[in-house]
Every structure is written in structure tokens, then in C-alpha cells.
Length: 129
Image 1 (cartoon, rainbow, N blue to C red):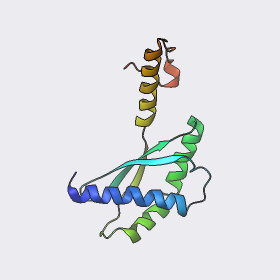
Image 2 (image 1 turned 90 degrees about the vertical axis):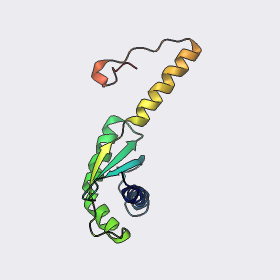
Image 3 (image 1 turned 60 degrees about the vertical axis):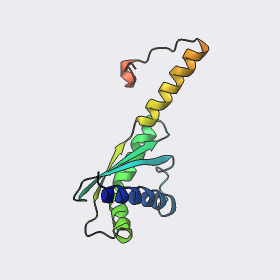
Image 4 (image 1 turned 45 degrees about the vertical axis):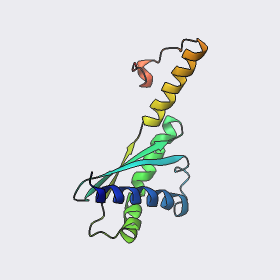
């Protein structure tokens, strides 16, 4: 990532957070954080990674709400960015936060001497570390 795309990524991340907080009154967008933004070199596409602190159903609703409001967000960014093109926003669920919590839980259990129950494959967390 070049210095320019990195700066634009940071601006997009900050401005999207402000836009969701101030301009949108959608209850589905309650507990989310834009963790990072990756932009293509020609600024045509932006992957916006989102962390959501909610249940699986609420997370799906949050991602749907972000997709619903993507056009408004892009319009808002067009007024804030001083670029010829404004990237199309693609929202991607960022599982790194959940993974970090799981590691912290495992380390805490090791420290106390407990063995955690194995996760079932149906829950999608059956990976070993």
C-alpha cells in the first residue's frame, strides 16, 4: 500500500465512523467498529473490515444495514475526499477481534488450570490454535 492509499484509507475509516455515528439512525448499526480499510491502487474499490460486538443474527443484520447504506456513505465520502474517484465500499466481517477474545480465554483457562470445552464444528469455531 502506498503512502497515498494509506492516508486515504485512514480518512475513509475515520469518516465512515463519524457518518454512522452522526448521520444514521439505524438501530441495526449499534455495536460496530471499522477496524481497517484496504483500497485498490486506482482507488476504485475499498474493502472495509467491520468488527461487530453482537450475536450472530445481529451481526448479519448489521452487515445488511451497512450494505443498504453503502450508497449514502459513498456520497458522503465524495464530499470529504479530494479525489477524482470515490471507491465502491465492500463491507467484510472482521473476525480478528473474536479470534483474539478466544485466545485470551484459552490463555486464562491455561493460567487457572482449567481445560476449556472443545468447540463444535457446527459453531464454526472448531479450529485448533
